Length: 204
Image (cartoon, rainbow, N blue to C red; front, side, top):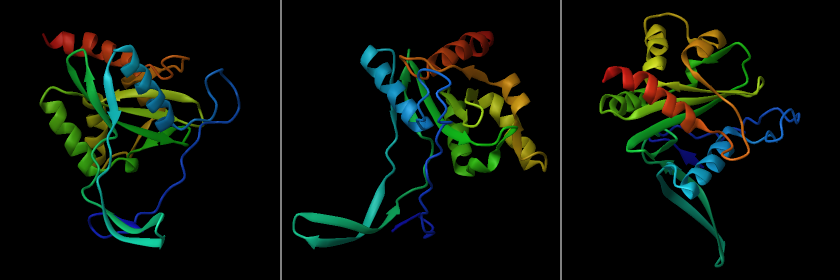
């Protein structure tokens, strides 16, 4: 049993898998996490960037030893709430991003995002890091990179009592759409480079 810092029991959720229909060569039902891990392995090996998934610190409370050669964790706690899924460095820029999936065909629910994640991303953004979400619409087989300064108005809209989701049309207008490839599988650095050139470049 694993519990959060507030004592709430952690319920493991099944991974959301992509559509199993082989609509493209590279789409074989991988989860977004698997696709990003494969992509990051390629980026590290090619020297393009160093990006890794953040480990979640866990404090073990109780361990069951059925025999000397085997041990099973029976209770544990997350030490601190998680921030974002991935971070690293690319071309001198700090990258910090969260991966999200949705089965919804028309909107991306903001309930999938936690307050502490947004606060963390806001701090990193304020200090000049490149912060974004990679969102996979599993039913539609579409991927988007939504950067923090484009995301935050939608979050603020929700806090002000407005819509609690980002529509597909809004995502299409404000985010950078990604296309699956062979290597790297999900080339999100192309979107990062466009973002730097178009938005950060305009600030200089």
